[in-house]
Length: 80
Image (cartoon, rainbow, N blue to C red; front, side, top):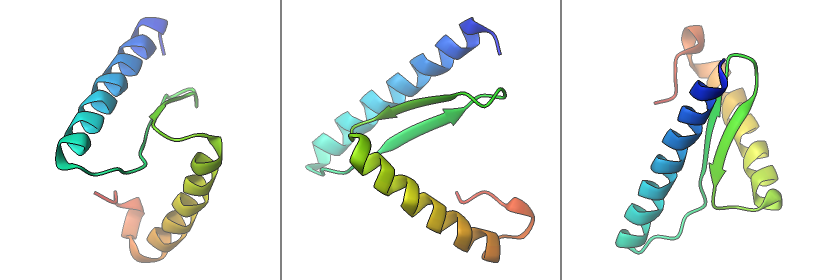
């Protein structure tokens, strides 16, 4: 993927992160979040409001969710 497209994706995730933080704050909600986009070459773009320890815990939780989804979702159906 070209550097310019990667930069655009980084900008998009930054915009989404900013919006999410603003909306959660307006609701009076404090919530950990991670936004992740993976590029075709395997590189990742991350925006988050958590540190490495919480990120690691979230990764473990995501693996558990994926394990359960594999059992219940036919043909790799998205979780949205």
